[in-house]
Length: 318
Image (cartoon, rainbow, N blue to C red):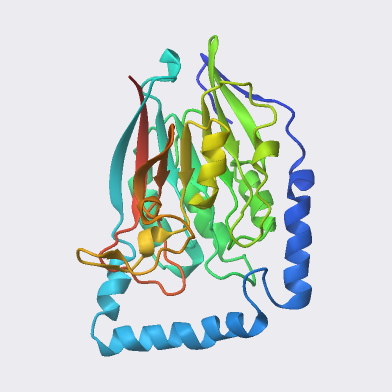
């Protein structure tokens, strides 16, 4: 992983990737054998894939807005977000994090190329992915890899790219992303050092469908009172993160609703959390958070009043 000479990226007690993925691999095998997930039975999965999606597409086409929704799906917005923290080490003031989430990259043609064009001239200090690289919940991942390789190769972050898996992702994606130069975090943390100062980045496995997130394990090596950023696929573990002293919670999954009504916002929250956590900046207790609007689309490749995004987050001290 490329680094600045003044900065050390230290791994403390990092398990092998296979060891970290063992709980997910067991759940994945259950999905394969049973034809269902922990949340959805066989019929619901079949209905969603073959009936619900077709009905939604038909409704959008009959209303004359389907083409606009398709065009909206690659109209990426660049959002610059600042967070202020009293406990941020001075060496990390101005530290810039490129946050990308919910690519579903094999489901939207042209998205990888659009991301490549927008990312190639950015120079963040660190890039993070918060999951969901595949469009479907099950099936082959092969269409994901050429497009993710295009995206990863366009990123020039001084301290590389850290990533977690989402609820759409097979475990094999973790291995393939690491082959591309991405460092996967599976219920573990890494320390980012500048001289005598450091911050910690912890990453969780998916809680939404796989129920494999283990926050105590992820924070096991993190010293007490260390400035900690948590990568989670969705926002639902925010209360536990507050209790454990996390400073910044970065997540995605919700797509900010993907379909939003004027004045009313997201038609569907997509996560069992308060509505304020569905998109953008938020705060809970002493913790701040950011829920990405997502780069891609789920279920159907359209967006309405809800542009996909690239977020550049800057850390500032009080």
